Structure formats: C-alpha cells, structure tokens
Length: 332
Image (cartoon, rainbow, N blue to C red; front, side, top):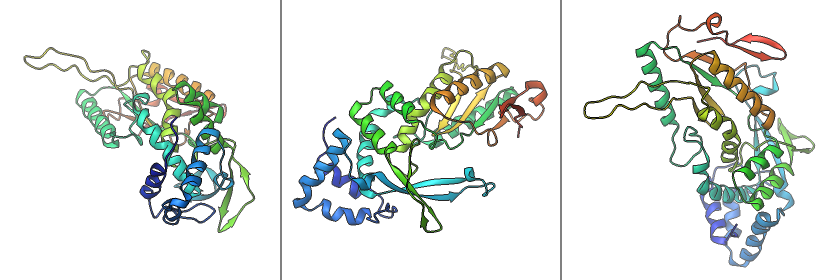
C-alpha cells in the first residue's frame, strides 16, 4: 500500500461533516483542520497516519471510544431495542476515512450487484424498482412466490474478528490494511454514556463500530458469503420473470431474482418449500461461520403477488426454529 501524503489527510479532514459529533477528546473536525494545515506539523501528522497504516501503531486516543444508546422501536426495557452509536475521535475517523476511500476504489467488483447499500453508483431505488416489478408481474400471473424480509440481530455488533480477517484475506485485501483494521477495531475499549455518566472502559472483542466511516463497506464484504451463494444456487428458484419476446427480436429468458440487499437488510424470493429449506441451510452455515444471528421476531414473509389465499402456513409449512421450538412465520 502506498503511504498517505498530507494532501490526502487534509482533504479527508476538510470533507468530513462539520456537524459530526467528536469523540471522547472533544476535538471536532473544524478544530483539527487548523493544525493539519500548518506546515510545521506536516511531518509529524504524516508519520502518525503512516505508522498507523503500515505498523498498526496508533495514538492511545484512537483506541478509546464512547458509546451512546439510541432507542429503536419496540420494548425499550430490552437492550436489543437500543442502537449503540460509537463516538470516535475525529483524527481516528480521518484515518478510517482514508482507508475507506482506498477500499471504495477497488470494492465494486467484489460486491454482488444485488447489494445496493453504501456502494458508489448504486442506489437503493434500483432494488426498490426491481422488487416493485416482481410484485407487479407476480400479481399479473397470480404466481406463488414468497418474499422473505430478513432481519439480523445486532448485525454490526456480532461480526467476529477471525471471520472478518478471513473474509478480507479471501478477497485479496492487503495484509497491512487487514492488520491495521483488526488492531484498531478489536484493540479498542469503550465507555458507555448513560445519562451523561461514563462507565468504566469495556474492551471490544468483536463487532464493527456503528459511526465509523469504513464500517459499511466492511459489512458489505462480511455479507457476501451469504448473498453470493443465494444468487448462484441452482437449488433456489426464486422469482422467475416471464420470458421476453418481441417482434423482430429473439425471445430470451431473464435470470431468476433470488435476493436483493441493502447492507444487512435482505429480501429473499422463494418459489416453494424447497427454496426455503435451501435458504435456511445457507443462513445456518453463514451464522456458524460469522457469528451472525437471524432475528426471527422481525423477519416477515409476504406473498409477492398479494394473493391472500395463495400461501398459508399449512400449505407451505413455513416454520423457523428458535430456542429448540418451532414457530410459524406469519404472512402479511
């Protein structure tokens, strides 16, 4: 990996959102831009950032974070209904912004086209349009496909460091980059902010930090071992678009639509119970490898065509196993 220069560092500091919350040291991007632009500090700044890149040597302040809990919907007496947002010191975020820029320049061919989350020149509306077209075609044909809206429990927080290293290595990411990310993410401690009071430091043994600039792209790589097998599985029929035939054109068959993704949110299309069984097996394999966990309380199945009588739990026997018991997925 080529070293950073001062122009890159200053540019990332200048492009960062000025309203972004600072980390535990209280120093904002606006403040940091002042010394970054002073020539007498250039050599020191460049050395700090390049030592972090090539040697995984970080200032102690980069390894300290604080966490604020933001409420989600649902029962707020349950910790899983609170979203942890990590407040990271801004100079450390400038470093991960630099890493993110380099990763973004090479990641597009590595990520399935069905993944639209946080990818340059990909838009969530594209997948929304595909889902809408599938629903319209299914309704016109009164077909039997099912859409499964999957929700992962604490998706970012459960990423295991060994799994992340294995995935980055498999995708050919430079080892220096991997070492730097692993040391920065998993050698860090956090203090939880509870009503303005900070807890004692808690070491972070796993998870991607929500609030870190590079976390979304890392998570896209983490998800690929689940998305790719679903896309390429011959055992999953998914949604089968109709053949296209027009005058003066040869008819051709569109590929089946099996999965659409936006970060950790998956929409999986199922044709029958055999599709479901194969998807469950792939999810189970992914969970064991990555430490992920499907949140079946928030996973919903629906009829793609909108036919209320076309699918039922008795006909498809759509069940999931949780805590050793069998439960039925309800249809909307």
